[in-house]
Amino acid sequence: MAKAKPVVKAAALDQTINASIDSLTNACSNAATAVTKKTAEAKILTAEIKRHTKKKATLTKKSKTAATKLKKDTNAANKKAVAAVTKELKSTKAALDKARASKAVVSTELASLKAASKRLTAYTKAIAAADKVLNKPAKKRRKRKTTK
Image 1 (cartoon, rainbow, N blue to C red):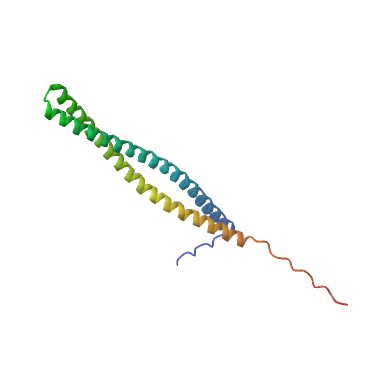
Image 2 (cartoon, rainbow, N blue to C red; image 1 turned 90 degrees about the horizontal axis):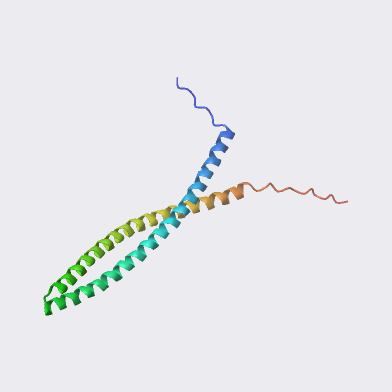
């Protein structure tokens, strides 16, 4: 014969509810912290991408100018200038690609964190509202005045 499952005590149930509410509140604050940090990281990466893009545009113009000079006068100085600009342009493109990849990862993570944070906030507010309704003190009824 199977053993009967014991019935949960009120104190244990209350403790479980309180622990769940505490963990939900902690998760909510952790999510807010994570969103703040990832937003700052995304902002830094955006600035870095902007800086590399600007540098790439400048180097592209320099490269065209150096190539034109090299066509007009093929000497060692012009060859070195073209090689230096090409090398710097290559490293800038690599840094730009790396920053864009990092930004894509951070953006994806940030979107997920914001969605989770939104859910946690909604759950926390709903539980707080339910607690407020459930914990209202009972209304006291007045005694009727007897008429003479």
